[in-house]
Length: 260
Figure 1: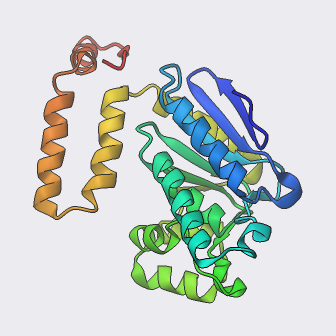
Figure 2: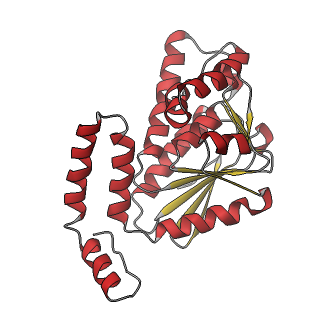
């Protein structure tokens, strides 16, 4: 499958997806968002892929935001549909069932920050800047930024970031829980690839259920979420991978998971 604005590299069980619009700081237009949807669904169903790294082309930006040229001509109806489409694609990424690591190599603003938040884990270069500056354009986040950000960093800090529109440093993003790890810019892709390679060795069914348990569980009442976890635990306990994992532990060898 060919793409205009995305690059795909395969490295063993790891897929590296690069948003390739460096001349506009990898801004997300509708075509790019749809390409992300199609590629992520392709990778979801590719049994050879165990983990994904998502990054931006060039040294300046992960994704610097949505395409302002498209936003400037939105109508109320069109704007709502534009937001819902982006939310759907980011939901696909969040619930892919395989770990998606955002390698934030520069600006992650607006839709770029929202895209990073939809990923399973976030690694940021020490030069990265993150934020939701839509207020400065007379807008507000539309790709679920007002919902994912408070869930990650708390209501108060999220509100401040969104209403001021001021970007924060990678170090501050790590301190408040917006990113998982900050690394030297020159080491970002090496670290992201290594983490993805490690995650790709995990049992695929267990990985899928863990992602689902965390993502869905935080939206449920605690007792209901515990029931959901127990159900998934029961399902994963019946897999061949569970039997292989426990046997390998007892036999003091590395497990060979098959995704069954």
